[in-house]
Length: 295
Image (cartoon, rainbow, N blue to C red; front, side, top):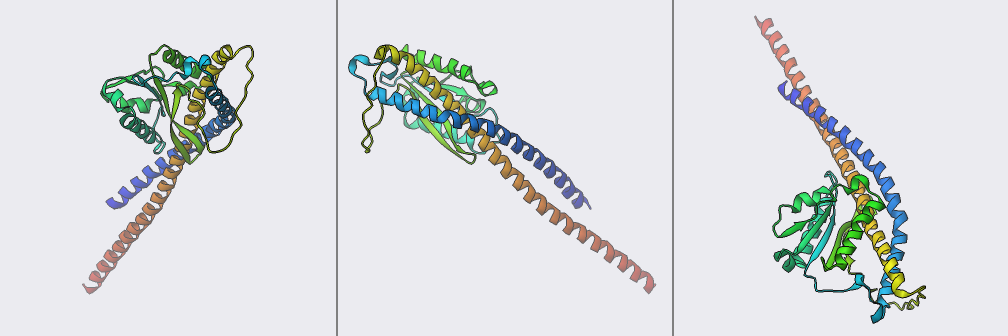
């Protein structure tokens, strides 16, 4: 009977866990709907702005060069790592950490060894992992940005990054984030934030954009480029937020299904043990009755 008590206890525990994972799945699904709507509305606008920016940069003449597209030797590097504040979202955080680790070891190993790599974590999980690393600097002022995610809060960060790049504090700024594809799929990206890259040549024949600048090219670009970069930074945050909610919903759905399967197996085991206990008791009663008759 002790075994039956054990199984009953496990059934109760798994049932409670299933209720929690089911509730977390519903919460994540609700958040996913909102965050998915935001990124889907933002993405076409952001991608078109990036296309315009890259095209303009590729057609700039020497005299119209901007501070935002100055390519310097990458001695001082800033990596903006966008992870979640919490776990229970499958491999979302670990994949972002692996992507950052690969970037550090394959691209910026020399800079890391000389102590010239700074990580700006957005979300606590990335910071909790890398804070134990040696030779890394941190800007831990924006860990809880997702608790109040807005364009104004995002712009406050991206504006500082642009200023620090122009001032020469950093030579390269990289974004590491998860691009939202659908609830079950995310692409883990390393995207150059600064310096702004020109459009890459393609095999397709594309007509060269001939923009007319008014009042003048330099003044317009000094106003336009920061706005586009602010939008690009906010889009990366929205992408990661939607990816996190999608990953958590899928993870909690899988956990709920696993709990259901475990409950089914435990009920079968419980019924078998109960049947065996009843059979044993019946046999004992029959055996006792037979012994009495013989006497």
